[in-house]
Structures are given as C-alpha cells and as structure tokens.
Image (cartoon, rainbow, N blue to C red; front, side, top):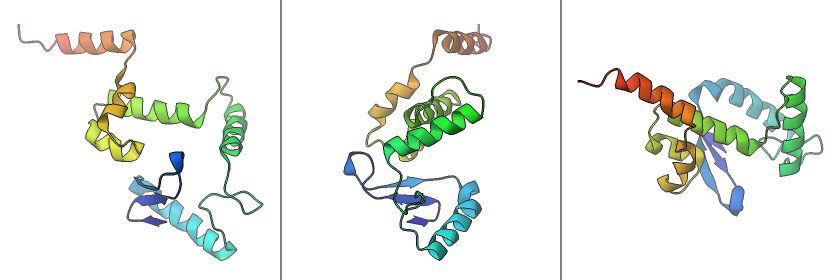
Length: 135
C-alpha cells in the first residue's frame, strides 16, 4: 500500500490503479496511522467507523464540515484543493515533469489547465521580469 514515499491507489478515478508519490515529511504520521490500521484490522487506508472506504460524497461532506469549522466561507471540493495545489506549484516554477507523477495525469498536456494564470498574476510576473530585461 505505502512504501518509499509512494501510495498505491487501487481502483481510483476511472477504476485505474496508480502509484502516487507523497512528501517524505508524511512518513512518520503515515507509519503511525498504518500501524493503527493493522492493529484494528482495517482494510482501507482511510475508512469510516463502519469499516468501509469513504465514498466521494462522504469525503465531500467531511471536507465541508472542516471547511466551515475553519471559518472558510467559500465552498471547497477535493477537486478545487487539487487544482489549487497544482496551480500553486506551477506559479512556483515547478516543471510539469515533476508535477505529473503527483497529479496522476497520464500526459503533461493534461496539466495545461493549471498553467492558466490570472491577468493580475501575469502582470505581476511581467513587471518583475521586465525589470531584469537587459536593455
């Protein structure tokens, strides 16, 4: 399931199996969680009190609950979080080749949606770069 900074996702989106890398900083917490899973006889990495994997709807409800508890008024979905992360990585200058394994996209072309910056972002970057233009 989890080894060397990678999690195997069985029958994820589109019923595809995939391996997704995760940050090494998660190792200790994830190891602790997995030890508890093994002790409790859990089957899923994250499961409900009824020993079942969370449904898409269940995850959305949980996210909504914690969003409200945090005082966030905008609606947030797993997809929006994912979009925000990959857009942020692109803004930080991370190359598509490094983002692709984390995204689960089969091609880099699919990552283009995260490259669309707002006009304000584009203007700010332009202003910073034009100052360095050798004229």
